[in-house]
Image (cartoon, rainbow, N blue to C red; front, side, top):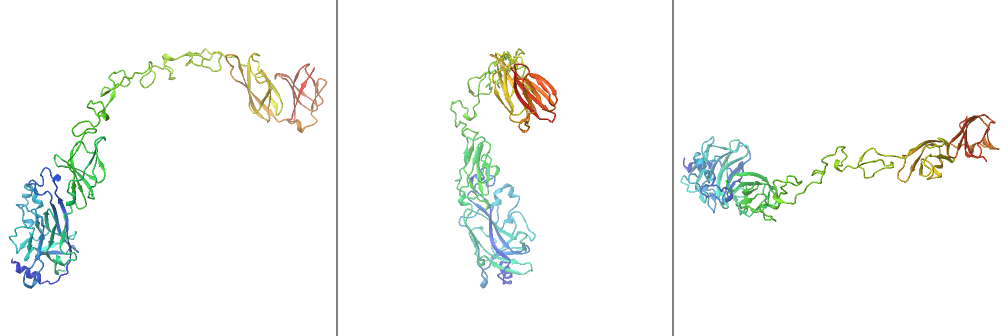
Length: 549
């Protein structure tokens, strides 16, 4: 087909408003030295500093078709030229083609850099085909180069056109260059309803596609990793530098193998080795770091300790203190820093536990002290740790005195201990009126209830155990019942009603307990003093002190 015949067909449609919306580019790969140290993708070393762009025509419907990319120089129907201006030049592989599908796919295995060849196309990559066949370039069959040419009368087309598809775009070229580029052409588009329309890049609001290398500012190897050699494990932090990366790719500096993808602005902990990293933003643009070493923790990359106070070749943080004596508490067979040996105290292990403790009291058997451990015993030994049953005590006796009395009435109690000893009395709910320290006391309770009176005898070297007596204290009704039914006259006690009469001496000894009738009497003991309690049948108690001569 001749170019002019095809051009005429283009002109028949006449419309300039089509379903194509704009041109756009996508960064495929940025090439910088550290990213391919083994030459896997660039064996000839032709690509450092280059960026591979993919150019797309964008549409409004999946059914829109791109019929041709062209420029016309026919008479009065001149269009703007087809221009791809790349001042830095393009990478064009010796086995490549200005139309990408012209490359043999088998060659891609032998020449991996062929994948970055610069070419025009219509949705087909090198070595592939599409439904309508491979794209055809008419009018410039001997195109010497893709970059820096101006086509005034040429067309690239596929019979049947190429559908936009679900992503609403069609690939129209791939350009690998080391600098800026500008692309301009005209496009024939067939709408869903079959209408053909023509559109030229110069008619877009933004004009022809023009771009600056997005990766160039970040390819200066100026991102310095921070390697914290004195942490364990060694921490590495890579700052953002001038880019705003989405992530960081870590590479093995010896093999070029990509090891990991890391979140930007985060620390990571690689194994010891040599690495470089690439910072990658949303456009796949990268900044690369210089090769950096991750040493063993606490060592330099040359294997020298960062801190080695004793100069023994073992880093201070890795020193193992200890001694070589197996009997020592600080025995350490792997010790690198010898310290004085520490041995347990005799009878104890290194944890301070007894080697032998038969009674489990925490005192080692060799250090037990036998003796009396009773605190009230006459032979109490405060240093004893093992009670040997040898305790002796002062004998204990019962407290003598009434187990019932009235409130606010002095009541006598005595303890038949050694008169030479001291007696300490304590009274629950009441108080000692007199006799504290003696064998006999007087006690009073201010309110009714059941209470305890307690005494403990003290000798020179020991005490008795405490002895107690429970005392029931009743309500004193004498004030509410006058005259009293219990009276004393001429050495006798007289009762005016029926009840029980009880006599006590001041030592608390019970003298008499007898039933009484109204008008009854009882002789009092001669030359004594005591307390008389008359409990009437109605529960009222009367009390008086008596003395006879």
